Length: 589
Image (cartoon, rainbow, N blue to C red; front, side, top):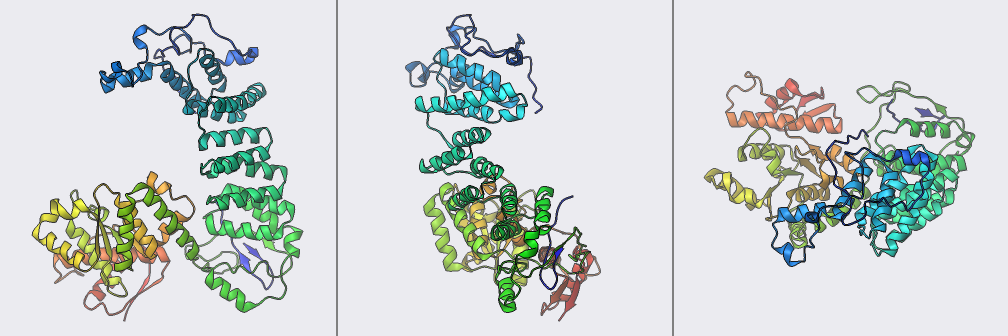
């Protein structure tokens, strides 16, 4: 906890290859060549000893049998072969064997053997693919972890040769190619070259990734070149790449050392906005700043209190955006929060910080772009138009996921219970938006007369959207929830590759504040509470109690007020007391 007399307080929380090579005999690399080994490069005796020479697993030039010759897929012979035979021929071809052996070198981190295979392939005319070149460049760029100076120097030298040869051979580079080359440049302590490679990547129409910016950014930070480091950061922002804790920590440390107080303030804000819990190394940089003379001397002594308060409200709480305020020595110490969010050092209670609306807008835009790339664009645009006409909604339900919570088969009864509960807690008593795949609303349980009637009522109310055939409904319910800034009811943890495309900074924070897990705390009500209640009503109250509990936990509420819930009110209040995990005060009005 950091305090300064009559000023502000800040809080930063912290948290206190094995490879197996089997004995399966590997096929030789090439066919139709001499039994003599080709040695284009003279290795030191030490490096020679590093090459595997086990007879059951070593890589040699022994000829393949004539039956293993690769048959081009465009040939007449290939067209008469089965798919299995074609795959086998491709796998056993010189190119296929080379790829397999280079991949094995990559798993072991064996750059020496990979370079030997490269030299052997080039001497015998075996073409290298983009994948082969990328594996070689990756191994060369990671050779620093080897620990042997001879191997490192060899890898760096050969790495640049291989990168140039890739261009000579006319092999088109991709993001992985440029990133590995940038790492090679950084290993040679040339961050300028690494940055130029990233710029070249973008000019070639290849979007750089966060890992692409690492070599030049960390390289400039290591050299203490703050101007160039912030140029890299600006290039990242321009490319839509979001820096994470390692990059922000490096820039913060460089700003502290360079005594750039405004940049220190900026990095502090970016850390606050994007990093949920700082690492020990970041905490040490923060402490170093607040213990410095620069931190004690910077700051306005007379500031507009009204602007500060207005800034805190606009920023969602916890940050005013007015720069450093006040002067004097900071008191720096580490503390803990209790379960209620009260600081054990100063006794102040932390306030919840909302998500910046601009971040939500940017996230919705990127989500739309990704969805249109992976879905039929016309279908998704049609959904956006439908949403604009029928929205906004207070909640969005992932229908397929909710319907299968406690059932082995699809249950409209389960789904309808959640829908009714969400309608009860809606300020406008509005139905939530239910997203279901078209097949779910036309076949199977949907053909049941009662379910047909339910589906038609949702459609008539504009509360059901059926996603088209061949679509992934995840894009639809996620976009609807983000665009409408409303609750999302789903048990989907959103951890698969689709959601990883959305990044690691904003998305987890958004989920935490908007996602409701419908099975959270679901338990059976006490029989005393349910006297005179039919099974349908009992189930609805159980679901609604769980939803209320989930919302109370997500917003940190310590009081739940029941306003005009009729007969359900007292039952709901009692049921919340029965199993609610947030230990609230429940009041009935």
